[in-house]
Amino acid sequence: MRIAIRIPSISDLRRKVEKKLKETTQVVYDGIIHFTSATRPTWAELMRLHPYSRRNPVEPYASSPYVVRRTGRLQRCIEQRRLGDWRYGIIFKTSEAPYITYVQRGTVKMVPRDFVKAAIEKVKPQIEEIWKRP
Image 1 (cartoon, helix red, strand yellow):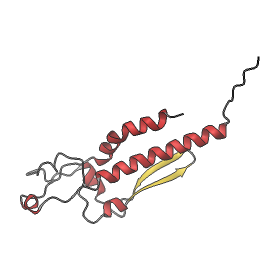
Image 2 (cartoon, one colour; image 1 turned 60 degrees about the vertical axis):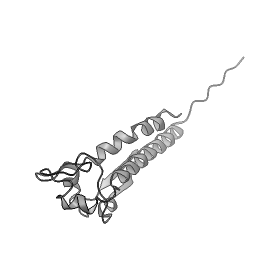
Image 3 (tube, rainbow, N blue to C red; image 1 turned 180 degrees about the horizontal axis):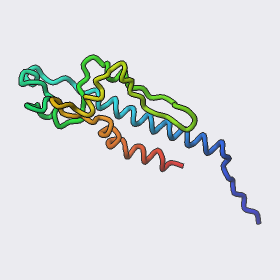
Image 4 (cartoon, rainbow, N blue to C red; image 1 turned 120 degrees about the vertical axis):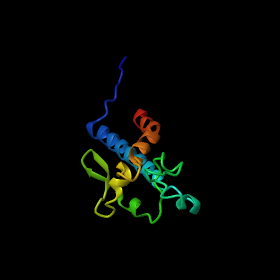
């Protein structure tokens, strides 16, 4: 009696890993876009001061990682791309939206909204599912 065991080739394994890396990057990118697509505050909320100010924040905006989408400029500066062999990434083009760092980390007058960390936490189950698949 013979037992045949098929051992996948290196190219098969490489293709599977690259596919999973690409899927993971796409899931994280979609999460970031979700967190940067919040609806605008109402006029009444804006009249109380800026909703993200440290001095007089408007809830739920001040404690939320969501970023209000006004022009879409911040979203346009976020790209998902292949960086090379075995490398995929999400690029933040700070030359097109230099304020992205201030939005994420906050300033002396503005509360931070770490939308990247929030997106990764939200999609963690999806990422785990991608890497559990054979």
